[in-house]
Image (cartoon, rainbow over all chains, first blue to last red):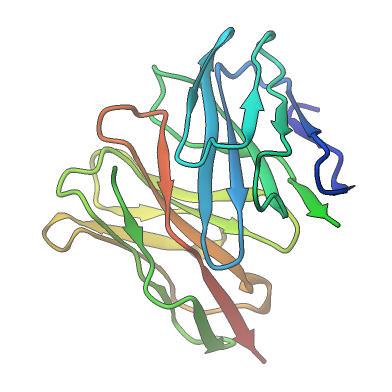
Length: 114
Length: 114
């Protein structure tokens, strides 16, 4: 089936540890995104990538890092520098610059820092 | 950066009643406008989108939204609420200069009473 797969769905981390959230897509979409969702704050953009080997910071990139080595994959690393990492993380994709918009979302990963 | 305002973080309606969820955006010329729905612990699904043309847009599950440029609004409506409509709804706009960058409102949780 075509879609976006995020893993793990739930993740627990101790303070000071880095964690990596996986996002894989087989929709052949060019653009990929990471959003953070906190209650009452909507979705905030962390990073996005419009093409392989290129990515841009979003509004809240501090404490996060990404890579885009393959079109299908856009992993997000939450580093120990992120002050408040407990949140719901959503990966999304879009066709790319030639399209009229619309994001497709994965099921999300919930990260809890203990 | 653009901003999106959703009036009312929680809306409660009775089953069969009109649903009205409000969305206002900051720019007088938004490229594209979207409404998404999110069920608990899931990703977002597109309900409808406005790009160009007719200002009244019909979406899935009986929802529709009207783009009003003079009011910078894109309110979501449904004539008759169903229990299955209970979810969180997000309004979004694309960036004026980068169609692949999106801004989300803070969300409105819809509760449907029997």
